[in-house]
Image 1 (cartoon, rainbow, N blue to C red):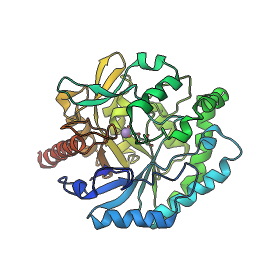
Image 2: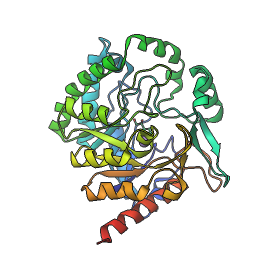
Image 3: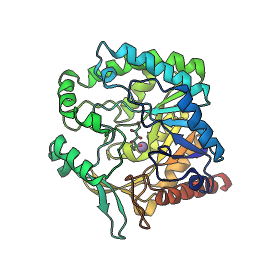
Length: 355
Ligand code: DNO
Ligand code: MN
């Protein structure tokens, strides 16, 4: 198991690599090139520069999150073949510089959806939350709220140039139901997995967040059955999952422990996002501190299931709260994620020494 930490790059992340290096047990960076639009090839020079910068700090770059999938691929438009070719070239380029795992998602239009980026907890810290009442607003209103509260940084999947077209994009999915979206996914994954196998890269799909339909959009990475379908449509260890414990648990019908056990045994989880959530009522929740007692998930059990089923991939703490006066990109401060990582490392050490 290798513990890693997401970093958005020098230009887009205020946390110095050296600080990340100082988190005990942190081995590497989950990196990305933030300025390459979905559909374009990631240039070798930029990958090389990113890798060198990270390695100079004593960390590794073996995981990328995310290489975003162009909307035309998800919509199944004729133009998709060109974008798929570009995606394959990006995979080759990343592999050349030692990347082993590529996290991505297949969510139409939006990446994750939260209705509150600064939900205040009783201790005064802030976190992200999802309350159903919040999505009874229109997408445009939500976008405005996000833009107003997020200052001068861009959120993943919420790039301003995409948001301008959001209404049109939602309309474009009118004729794409879950069945059609699955077909489009199958077309994409069948096209890219041979390249991954050739260069030794594992693709790792992130669950939908939240894992059920919103704004009438189709969703195909919601539960055990979807994950099973994905793993079966191309039966290869290169076709894997980023098992995000928070996202998958946002539907209380999902049994995160069972899902983790099954797909670890099937050798299909090269990357795990481990975080806790706390249900407020029904499906409403906030992103809780990692500690079990603070949320609705049993983090010991999560780590135990991974450990006891021989998990040997990468783990990162997922979102953290804003604490100790830190400000910046919601979910991606230094302090609470560092605390989360230490806690997960502690659980893992206990599991290793138990007997
Ligand atoms: C949510 C986050 C996501 C993730 C992307 C991967 O839990 O981990 O924003 O980064 O969906 O493509
Ligand atoms: Mn996640």
